[in-house]
Length: 247
Image (tube, rainbow, N blue to C red):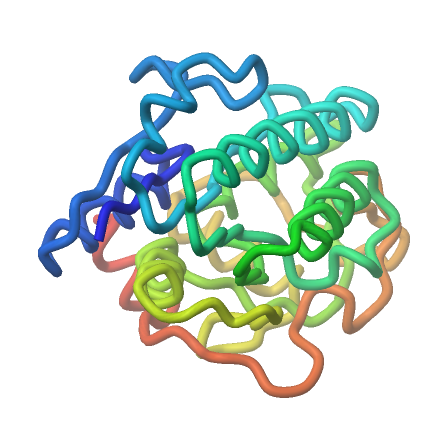
């Protein structure tokens, strides 16, 4: 099949493209740097010509609520319109576990994206993932105040991007689910515990303070908001395996 991967040059997208090519599919890495811009529509018609599947892994350059909502609403509408014209049969997006629970503008924008896809009238699949292990460092940076990293003691089940790419690839080459699946890492940690362990492994001197009032990218957290609810498909890569691969 010809499968267009929007955001195909990014962390997950580049791995999805590689996986698809390994399985004999024609994978197109579509991104602004390759001449495809979902926000403006530039290059979309050409990229989607002859495609059966589109995987949308795009992301907003700004996380301000107005900006990110505009990005996902506009880019998703542009994509769905272009797909209808090109005869694309399956639209896959990567979303976030707990998006409807966490009180953050970015999460609300992802719900806008999900709702547009569900209402599109064509074949679709939504893969909701927990946070990537690769983002532990940026999470710590965002949570730092005066040299101390404040993290809430809630459950956290991070997943390696390689596992995310495998699940997305598997979904893309299958028939449309017309449903949402959740994926997560194989281990559950305390959020504060895993951030502390990660910083220690990097010889990072910052202290991690267990802080029930700490926010997550500005949003207050309740236990259970960052882990799957019900059945979830679990990745294969443990935290220790992932850290060893980073060394």
